Image (tube, rainbow, N blue to C red; front, side, top):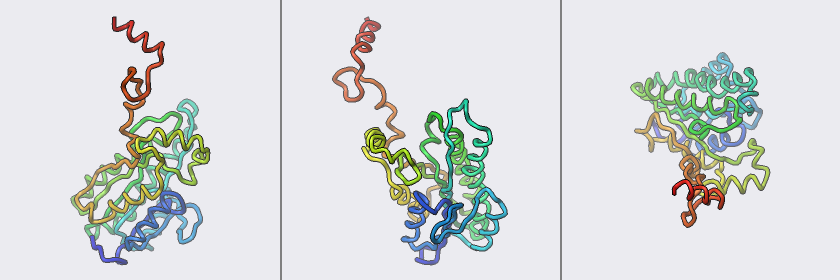
Length: 260
């Protein structure tokens, strides 16, 4: 990839706010001309529904050659599994999985023609760990992980890299639960690094995947979560004297009885 400042072009979907806006701003600092796409209105944003194949192709044709594509746009419609509306399930898959396929095909054509490019898909720790009552969200992100690896496999021989970034608990304006100070404190305490993530934590990693610093990295998923995805064992009770959640006295006594 050519690293001459100002000569590279990047497309970021879902770029009107939150993580997408932070990614777009960070790539601009690195000298990219950034095309910001979103269904929402915003300064410097081209409105585009990424589930509309014709609209995506039209913008791709008008933009011309691109070097980097960041598939960030996503939605969630949470519900317990037994209550998931099939139409909501389809809508989430349409935006979170089919949309990235359409943008990858449309903007990837110029990468394939020129034999270089980097695609970065924004997934989630929800793709790695089951999470209750999230509807189709985790399924859509797990599918996007598979699409990441499929793209890396098929397009790698043609000079295209594809990787994914999996955010953990990121406090953005779109995550309404973090408006509750008690929730913020409790969730931060559950993260090994003892803080919630910020959009800049994600944008820095995307910038790495967009750069030549990751020229030999493809088909990988990097979870940016403060260690949360590696913290399962910290939730298990420990006997007295061992750091971590402690067994309740009754449970400890029962355990001693069972070991006798």
